Image 1 (cartoon, chains in turn orange, green):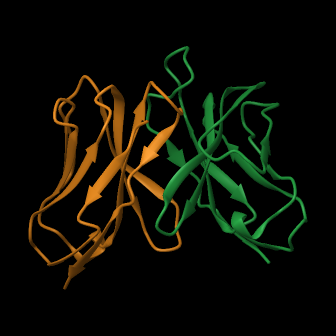
Image 2 (cartoon, each protein chain N blue to C red):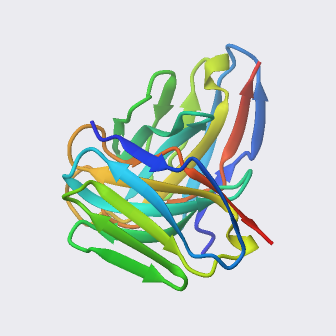
Length: 113
Length: 118
């Protein structure tokens, strides 16, 4: 059964810093990995999707990488802004076991003005 | 496109009552699914569907029922509500490129339904 872990659970940094959020997964037979953002009381917004054949994806100030052999993905946020404050979730789709996304518990990010 | 819509946004039920959470998407997605989000537990898959007439169980299906009569709609039914079903429920949809039972495309989520069972 796929398990997804996110470290750290919470992070607070000053505005302007570059930062990295970590996601690890136990089953390397992963079909894709998706990063989401969730604002308080809101739904999930998809940020980036990395297919198993890809190593990274970029969108604006965000860059996500995937290393299946080590079971790790990272989300890099450049030049952080207070508007980036949210909970960031990673989730993977694996072929075995239960279908659908297996989520980590998220990293709660606060960017201090 | 409205994307994925869910109704109601909030609901309070008494133990034993039944209700249906509605989910609709206008993107012609084959794959739809329901998750519940609980503090400390993260999001967990309840049921999913790879197309009209096809549904299957996820990780936590007990106490819930689904059907998929059209591509657009995927309602979630609580048969006899229990306090343990107090949660935030999210519906999601995506294309499904493969003929299998999983999605390999971006999944889009609705705004959620916050349910309290007393």
